[in-house]
Amino acid sequence: RTIKEKRDAYVQRLTDIYENNVKKAHIDVIRGYGKFTTDPEPTIEVDGKKYTAPHIIIATGGRPAVPSDSEIPGASLGMTSDGFFELEELPRRSVIVGAGYIAVEIVGILSTLGSKSSLLIRHDKVV
Image 1 (tube, rainbow, N blue to C red):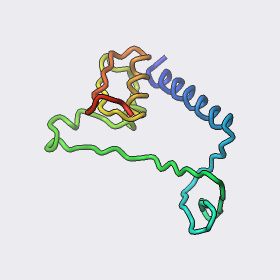
Image 2: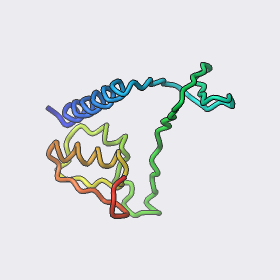
Image 3: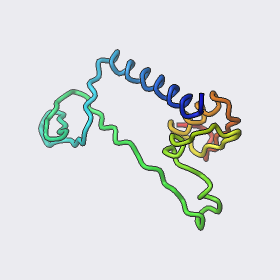
Image 4: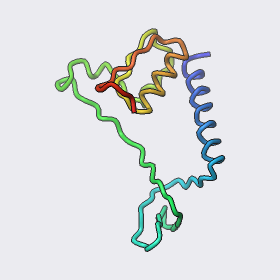
């Protein structure tokens, strides 16, 4: 199998585990654009519909900060996590920069698939 097939299977397995854990915890997942309301009870409005619950989480996702070559020489040689999901072949060696969960998961996936992988972090702990 190609790296894409292996990676996609690995990511699907993780997704299934996460979704199963959410179901076991009896958590309702509502997809869409949400915002908290001014209602007296904890309420969120998602795509025009209101939901009230004792505990509400809005998972916003994020966007990577991509430096230019003038800021960091050689920066254009790197890729974001989106680029990782476009790889067709497994790199022999890889260096992942970051200490967040995405960096840790990607270095784990690459290492598991056989790439000699390193994780570069600024402090002494991953998130």
